[in-house]
Image: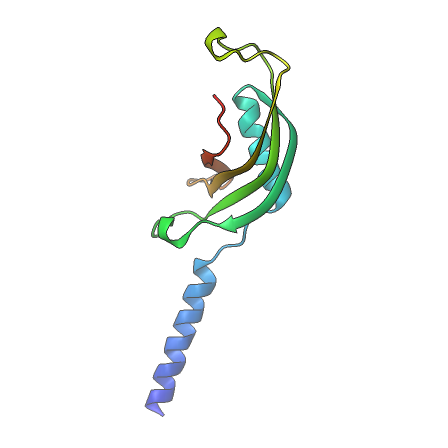
Length: 127
């Protein structure tokens, strides 16, 4: 009887831990808004955005007691430059740049407002 009770408590504790440790991915429309807002603040207009997948960040890169994070795999993204940039970069207003297979990592912001923010971008070389 005592073994059964101990086993039941261990299984219950494990289930509670698993259910509270895992968080659900944000909706695709939320992710699109985060990406669009980010690039607009950087001086670009998002002309096209195709999200392939939203997946949890790798276990080895998670922080203990950190906020949830997800990798957003982009099939493709097209950015248009809003304003002329520095001459050495030869970025002209209205010029479009397309990228494929980029990954954007998003995490939930800490603090009172729990919105999503971009913490890393790979495969999209923009200023």
